[in-house]
Length: 400
Image (cartoon, rainbow, N blue to C red; front, side, top):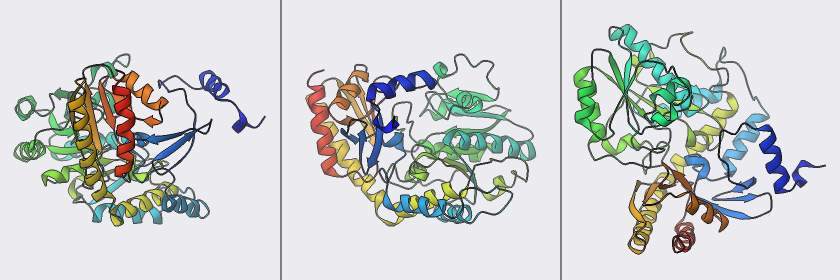
């Protein structure tokens, strides 16, 4: 039997039989996508405002990215990092020339990028900061699922069952500079922070928060590491979210939208800090492979060249305004917050049922932190798409 002729129920049974249940999946089989829409195995169309969770910045199957992958796949899919790799060098140049940082390390995911940042911070500190090793992160943060990055994540529920956790991390409330400064001790080497907390519920800090962290780091001789995995590559209306505060971090981490769906992550660092990653100190078999870098280069160049970041800012502002209009209509909406096309709607009730009912009407949205609707759609989203989404959401909330 041709597998593509299987029924939805047959697919779901096969999935339940063979795949570890690490995700609570919705009962649809997504088989293809184009632009801001995806289709399931039964041919039904959905407006996708999840975008692979802030990944498909150019939408699904963007022709420029597809062609870059196709062309590179016919030339060279993989070669060891024992050799210089042309697409990797081109992508590194593009990232450095469009950021205030100097060097790049490539990996395969956001967790790996943060893992690399943690290692580089410790390596640099061992050489220049008297062996300090502790990194302060924020309560309610999210930095990945490896053992080190889940420990860096400031959510105790995600730590359950993985003890003993690696030492070297402490947590302070987000958006609280006083608490941050008070937590610094003789072991502290750096501070790891998200410009906007994504998994924590799209929490936007007060203006000046990142500048305050930069000032503390400068005064105390600490490294400032900014996790741009969800906020980076145009999501908030600038290429990097830290640019809203006109600062220069010591390191930034990237993934998600960098490859428009092709797995790739990156750590960027200042020259003097990057120097601590000497030959043999870190590596990745697949990190920066030709295929991933070709996809990322095409994606990033398109975002830079075609006004995608401006659209993120403008359509995001329109989206926020429409949601705030909806807030006036429904008391269940407690708060609407966000920047660009990274938007959260805080509800007074759990939002899982609203997500499911929206999906049944052809709209894919996401729930995070139990009661926050999160919208991280492709950055090519148009106002007509927003209007369609609002019509569906209005109908769902009217039944809540």
